[in-house]
Length: 311
Image (cartoon, rainbow, N blue to C red; front, side):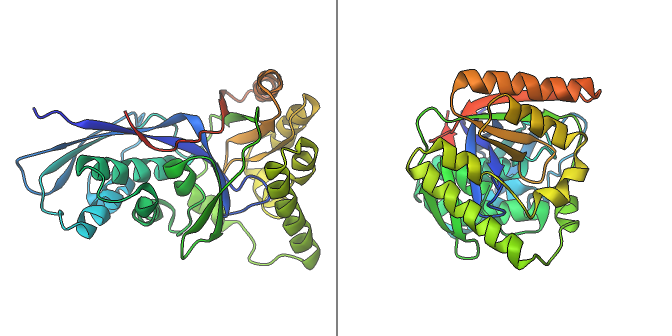
């Protein structure tokens, strides 16, 4: 068997409270891995998928986020007939609100780029990865894909043109993510959202988004805390997550700067000023779920500044 290469793409937190579809950041863990190697059989093939825990992912390229993203890249460089084998190793939960489909798409296109010795720069891979994730949720948005690919905290000024920008990350900033053992599909979480919002909500949300960005650039944790509020999406989606407001209250009482739904949920994230606070917040959030007979998993991380990497 020919030797291959391995690529890791990290999980992400999208929306970040007040930035629906336009804000996201990368975590150190969990994430997805893809192994790719050249083959004597023409064309790209997915030869193995692991870590699915009973959920069947399609091997057909046009139905698989990693496969589709990889094929779009190969078409772009004129190598779609080249023999390539791809293994997908899922290292994160499905339907968690942590960008599982985005991480696979990013890892898929990144692996192809590395296999051909990087004919494109990282940011040039973004469109292929977004097109891959679109297979899973039907929407063209980069708030999971962009941070998974390039790392950091990302603002997407415009999704159609993929006008994305990295924001400042204050020193010491930590993330707690608690994933309750329930599933929410992104398509279902988007389906319940209203198409209208009030002028008052619009003004509040814009103010919070602007305040969060300023707070990040100035390392102003008080401003970040005041700004991490979602007055539009969170109130509509909170009902999908058991005991959401109790868990959020536990996080805030234990020192979190802010707490909200990660992506479409059910994972809940909290930003914290340091690791000690993050550890206390994580314990309190998980204990609240436990007290309500909901099993959960904890991730504590800094902001991943690298994004997808070759391992």
